[in-house]
Image: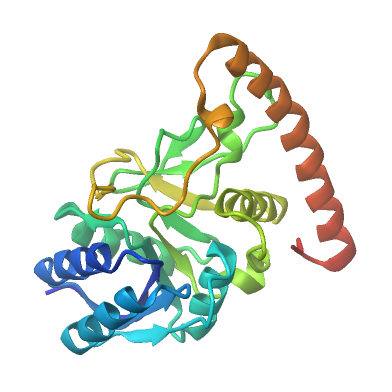
Length: 267
């Protein structure tokens, strides 16, 4: 029975209570024991609120509510501020852990205890990070390089809201998530805030081995991505690459200037 008295599980939720139940059930089946499970709800509708209340009796988690929907940035901020343990395992409600997660969570926690400079350890991604160097236990250290700017804009996605273990001082270290913006923008700004503050992070080499993301017909994703950002037509790809090249570098420079002025990147 893996037990983590210094780790709290933070789950962000919005109108997907059956998905939340699936995640909590899967974690129970893996017999993972955390100091606390915190569910941060973003003003779900009455039907899902009622279901969450029933789940709370079954799984004994702390529920951090919002009177209205305020977006992913606010939902993560208020949930993270509730955490009291040194480490936070962050998972959105539409993920399901695989059996190997228990072993790799234990090992990544050990690595973070041994090396205080590691800020977070990632367990999932849509694609592999382009620049890495081997670490231990199947993990790689992500390396942010300024050269080869044109070919590898994916290197900017050093940080992601996908499942990861992080130190609970994350908001103090990198600044709060942007609020009042859509989820993509909130994640993008946090990505820049993280890079501007010179992070150190690991990612598991097999990005599909530890968790899977489930968006089914019963509870589809509550967020729709911009089609133009994901269209694979060659003209769209070329225009997107040029746009990202200019935007990513100019915005990262702006966040670095903020860091020098204010001591850290601010939203």
